[in-house]
Amino acid sequence: MDAQEKLGSILDQLNTVMVGKADQVRDCVACLLAGGHLLIEDVPGVGKTTLAHALARTFGLQFSRVQFTADLMPSDLTGVSVYERGREAFVFHPGPVFAQLLLADEINRASPKTQSALLEAMEEKQVTVEGETRALPSPFFVIATQNPHDQLGTYALPESQLDRFLMRISLGYPDRAAERSLLAGSDRRDLVAQLPPLLTAAELMQLQQAVQRVHVAEPLLDYVQDLIAATRSGRWFLQGLSPRAGMAVVRVARSQALLAGRDYVAPDDVQAILPQCIAHRLVPVRDAGRGAVEQVRALIEAVPLA
Image 1 (cartoon, one colour):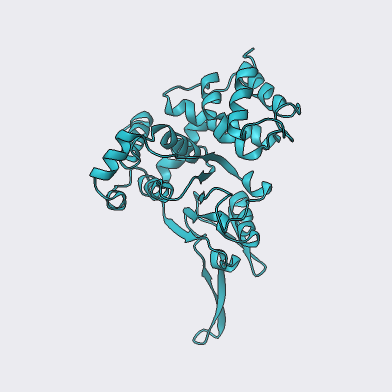
Image 2 (cartoon, rainbow, N blue to C red):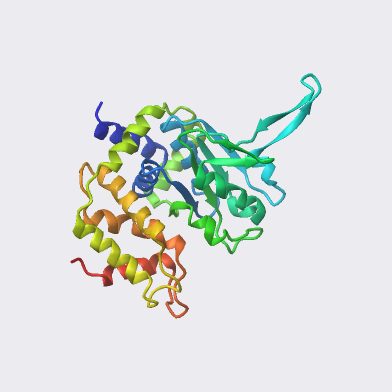
């Protein structure tokens, strides 16, 4: 089975669970192929956790889930050393962060101290516990879910942590036909439990290498730079994008092109993923009258293709 057949099978399998959410499923797959972490933000009950479970099973990844709560401590994530009498020594017991895919469920219900415990893991693929640095499994992904900030008991994620997420998506409510399918069909948890893994870790790495080989032409890089410069103009946002955010856009655009069956990035690829890649990193100007995602879409309309 070639790369395109594998990718098609992955999308088809995920869409059997996430009915009517083909665009969001594609974004999630693009994010993981680009080697990035994913933030899913929406109201409770629309399938955020189900999607994370389905991604882990489909990609064949070792999975760990942590329910973030106000009393969750950093050591609950990273692990702790416990004295064992038989060995007459302290033995490190790894925490749930030592998995290939960590689901940080309702991440913004934990305190900022615990949220920040993920920073080193997400950026460096390692954690430092009691002065010793320990490598995390490879590949390593974080899929975090969060509730809207206006809900009770939530803490806003700091900008430094938001920037570690390659993409942020929102699922939204299903349309009427998709909701009828959910109401009449099997429990989503039962469906997820039956999903077979479609990739091995080695095959995932091969697909990630294929993403890196997707060609990005100079005119397209000019277009990405024009978009980045527009975010820094002060017209749209209080503060513009960093170079790291620009590199993130190119990475995900390459994944999007590969999913479309092309070996080169087109402007449509950039436009399709731009709101999901940069809106969570930006704060609209005070008189914008619209949210960051809508502001990014307006920016796309305003910045001409060369």
